[in-house]
Amino acid sequence: MDIEQEERDASFKKGLEIRRAVLGADYVDRSIASADEFTEDFQRLVTKYAWGEIWGRPGLDRRTRSFLNLAMIAALNRPHELKLHVKGALTNGLSRADIREVFLQVAIYCGVPAAIDSFRVAREVFEEIDG
Image (cartoon, rainbow, N blue to C red):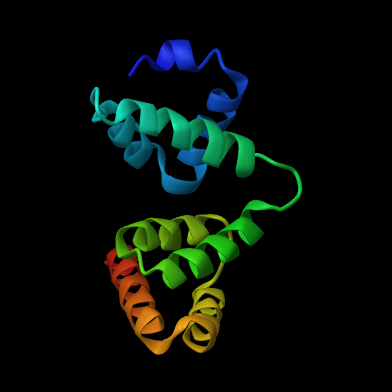
């Protein structure tokens, strides 16, 4: 992917900065570096629009966006993305107790199976962090 060309685009540049801050530069840089002809357009789209245009809006702070993302991703039962965003939520200031409350809410409004998987994924993240 031609990052130098994309970095001239303000939304992409902003998105890359936010994406690295929330998810970790190593993860983001690996994702971008591993993009090929099939996936590079998707990497651009996610970085520019999800991270630059949406996460970069002033209407909600990153902590609130993380609350929302955890609930939505848990409801969609997307464990890979949930694991990534649990880490991001911790980076954005959510506590483990906050995350627990999100998943209890998910249990009621989205179903116990979604919450079970979400708690399991979060526990894996906590164990990785705790060593």
